Amino acid sequence: MSGRTIIRRLAALFLLLGLLSSCAAPAQVESRPAAAIETPPPVVEELPELPPEPTVATLAVCGDVMSHMPVTNDAWDAATETYDYRPILRSVKPLVEQADYAVANLETTFAGGPKYSGFPYFNSPDGLADGLADTGFDLLLTANNHCMDRGFSGLCRTLDVLDERGLAHVGTSRTQEEADANVVVADVGGISVAFLGFTYGTNGLPLEAPFSVNLFNTDYLTTISQLDETRLLGALEQAKALEPDLIAVMIHWGIEYKTKQNAYQERVAQFLFDHGADIVLGGHSHVLQPMELRTLARDDGERQGFVCYSLGNFTSSQVDPLTDTTVVLELTLVRDNVTGAAEVADYTYTPMLMRNRGAGEAERFELLDVYAELFSGEECEVPEACRAAVEACRSILGTEHDAHPEFDINTP
Image (cartoon, rainbow, N blue to C red; front, side, top):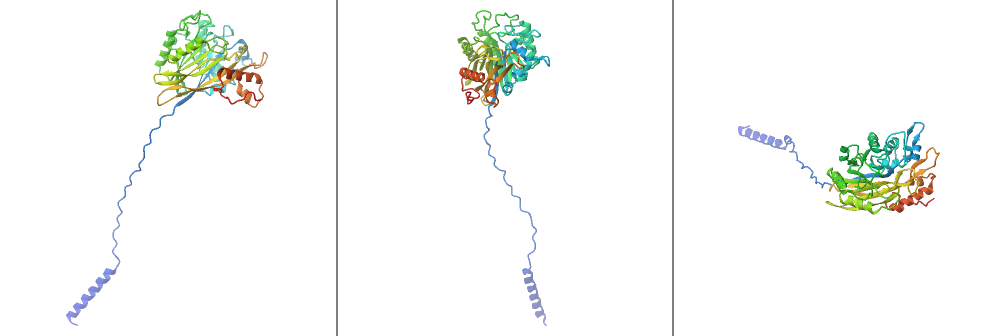
């Protein structure tokens, strides 16, 4: 074989090997991870901030707390040798306790025993204060025509007894310093209410200490008709300076046993509203008198106020017509938490009757929730008296604000 032939064959062989090599599987290429794709954060649309909800609270108001001797004697518990008023007040306790704050007029003194007395110079056992605290009361008006029945010492001891039981009080003072600061600012379910207390007079008893009783008349020992505008204005300005949401004036006034307010009460109420009061809570007549919402003009606009001329007797043994009938009044207070304005938005009342079972009964007196008695499903002891109480309340106060206007009291 010639050299040229060998070279051609070698060339053909190399060509064949090249072709075989090109048909082989491709070489593996090193795998590299793909770059991570960045996902943009979700777009959250900002919602507008909602205005704060208004604050809503309830204030319970009750009438004249009196303890004539038949009531005092009925409260005596021989087993414990104490005066226990809780059985007398047990039916009203749920209505008082459910409110954010509760007030009443204390028309007696706690001058100390054992010589207790009723009309005309009241002095009641300390157990009455225990009963009021247990029922759920928070504040008592102590300025009224009986606050001086046992003199200045009796007035002072009354306040001591209330302090010991955690009951706030307004209207009377033991010292000039107390009188200078005689405003109670209470937290009523998140709404601040400044309470002031005044009385028309002291049943002709002169003050032993000029500062001891808040009087709204300059002639409290004579005609009781000259309004002390300077004193009232000063008290209202003092309350305003404390910057409460509302100002309430508890006041002792009017003519006894009249179921309608007189012109002087209306004048005093208007004066109080005109100078900053939002709520006026009256007492003294021992019977119910009308109540109403009022439109009040304030620097930041109009709002609703409220006046109650009298809630009658809360506890007593009086037998004159309607003196056994009262109500638990509940005011609905509202503060707009955007503007800061507060007002009395509404009110309701629940009729009550002081049941007198007669001398010799183990439990002679009990303040009854009339609707609970009539519609509890159990037999009512005094259905006619309960119906008469409802009729009186609806007649004097109106049906619209009755807590249960739907109740038909004529249903057997």
